[in-house]
Length: 469
Ligand SMILES: Cc1cc2nc3c(=O)[nH]c(=O)nc-3n(C[C@H](O)[C@H](O)[C@H](O)COP(=O)(O)OP(=O)(O)OC[C@H]3O[C@@H](n4cnc5c(N)ncnc54)[C@H](O)[C@@H]3O)c2cc1C
Ligand SMILES: COc1ccc2c(c1)CN(c1nc(C(=O)N(C)c3cc(Cl)c(F)cc3C(=O)O)c(Cl)s1)C2
Image (cartoon, rainbow, N blue to C red; front, side):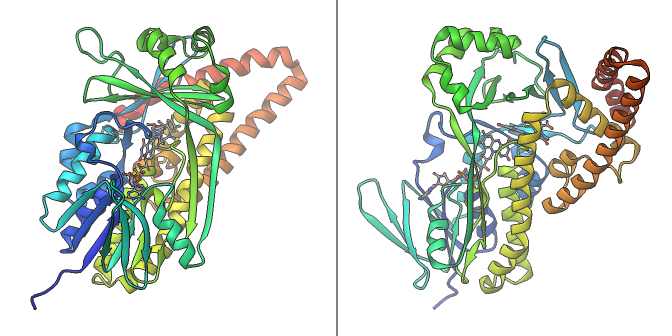
């Protein structure tokens, strides 16, 4: 009998499952993707997950490894800066870094379709849509799928990879077969998505190459440009009980008038009211677990292994990096699953957990301390120190989004930065205290506000930094 390629079953044809199929078919495996939903390439809007996503260095490097980075760049929009929207309507840009340091705004549906089509280019990839994974037998290496008509299909393979998202059924099976530690936690915030349509002459209604942010402490809204139709997709994050308290048209419009006044004309009153009153806010969950594998024939990746809140824009980038790291271990151990699976699980776990924690840390930071002034001040301060000491002071967001530094090392990097910032800020606090003691609070307060205003207006640093880098 001729050489029989080993068979891999991938459960889930989302972003990570589809990219995994590209990596594994490149290694000569016979790959079968079983996806719960119908073919996304034939669907209209897919509700239930963010419409736009940001792709940064980690994700791009994984796409590059399978030759898809250029094709992806064609259909994404480069974002060189954030645009902060103040309550008074002032907008302030803060650069992400040097000219070549940018993130990409990509359309989820388009990216998923591109990855599925790229996987299918390899004849050894078969995609079975509307196949719901229900259980598997690790001893026999078989997985059972249910079809819409209720019939069942059994797939036998040498490796099962669970890429079935945050509520993974494959993870559930692993939990019953091995001592897997598992944690799941929701945050009190939910999100809804709104849309800023193109102008009458089909142009973008705001500056295009920016991640637009309306930081309002308890709430936050962000907007990403969508190249598919020159629109912006807005994601509004807010506590569920505040969503639930907005029951009438007047309450919704009053809220937007008070919190995001400059967005009303851009989105349109009807769109705001109809979206707010018709859609339920969606939840945001963190999932951590360990190990990611069982035996030598089953492993989970992407959100199935580590779902995170989106406050760093890293979930998909982390899942794409999972595929790259797994492929590196496959190369190191010559496709020997018995070695690859435990090594991958042990190596990747601390990094994925670190990213889940970083995203949650940023959610807290954004929520508690961040309104426009503090957000601006911190980012300009970070950019200035990075410009001054490029290899010593690497802002946290730079190490996360613009490097392939292991995520757990980014946390060490943040810890000593926070120590430095605490010293600087408490030093300023002591100075203010001394002046207040000598000259009284009324003397210090306007000076403190003016100083904060100046730091938050440090565009000149941003300009200097971007010119000189
Ligand atoms: C509001 C929001 C904003 C975000 N923004 C960003 C961002 O800017 N950048 C970023 O990198 N990440 C972002 N993310 C995270 C990103 O969406 C996820 O990390 C990414 O989708 C994970 O991909 P995945 O393939 O692991 O899981 P999923 O995308 O959830 O795909 C899982 C697939 O498995 C299928 N499936 C599920 N159960 C079964 C079953 N039983 N049988 C068969 N198939 C099954 C599903 O149908 C789906 O197709 C954001 C997330 C949210 C919620
Ligand atoms: C589709 O829904 C979503 C929802 C949230 C995000 C994204 C897409 C993409 N996100 C990115 N975040 C960073 C980042 O590093 N930080 C610290 C930031 C974190 C927040 Cl919350 C923010 F608003 C700005 C920045 C910023 O720095 O611009 C990037 Cl870099 S991209 C967050």
